[in-house]
Image (cartoon, rainbow, N blue to C red; front, side, top):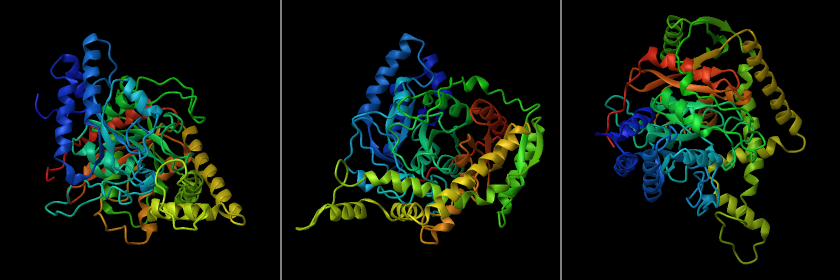
Length: 495
């Protein structure tokens, strides 16, 4: 078989089972593709020796029979997941040289299922960003281009390296994390599928924390079926994570019927934002028509507190980040600043954090510290928590009316050029999360599915939001949308 790296998880699994290829051959094809894709800057820590060793073990396991679905499949790992003995920097200088002595629960689950790790993927520093421009490794680059324009585009953030690698066929799939849209937005920008499961479905243990009440891991894949396969392998109950849900993990792939008859799809009026590009509105209307044609009932709904979601998110997330990042002090691990004679412990903290954290992380830590400070705690943080409760209640009220899932745009635009927003008002960058943050605030599952291209040929996606713990139903609805849209476009190779 040729172009093995272009296979999806399901295709590769079936080829392995049929004896048409081996995990070693799949892995070598991906490693070759990675070696030729330096211009994308997607992989930042290469682990070919680990990959080939895992592939050999997977091939032996496949010969024995009865191996799990992910066995022998080469994937990329976002740099936010701690991987034993492999650099795990979260895209930050402050964690330079950190080699964990343990494995994150999600990566361990994948390895237990026989998955092969090709290396660690680029990301925004500490997952703080929407364009992968805050990474200590430099920008990850989108494999897509605008028509004949050679402007480098963002792959989205913070899981930009994961999105770029999957879209460019450097790996069969990748892990991502989503705190305010960091799986779904990059997936939309690169024409792949990305699902954020219900908060608590995937363990957060061993995942470097950004905002603990919002962070959730999920798969980034080439299609919905692959997302179902990988999500099942990633999920588990974990006693080491106090927010992990002790619920059985369904067979997500078996649930992919795509049958929309009798399903109610909600269309929230509040997501029709002022100034929304006409192409996004058209994409949304086309998606509504597809779901209707598939047999679903379309219902107009209201989520009245949506307009407060972004400001609430950008109080809660920086507050939690400020608390979580306090541990990076130059004492126990990671970067420590060089000190001048006479410097004390305070100067060491100050210099280490000033050198170790990039500007965006510094900005969010300062915002978070401010909103948690005496005199502002009630005015900002407590008020944002109350708004979050109201947003969650909006979704609960809608689902109580029998709505099965909610269809919205995934992003307010297609991918933009690297550098086009970074120098502007940071609030403009934060607006990229306008359609995604509500899902994190409410702890719901959400999936981005590519459904079309804009006039410049760049991919655009729609988002489906599901009921809590009903990822199986959500994936089936996404499967129906994927089949109706028939999106098969791929970026032309320039790298």
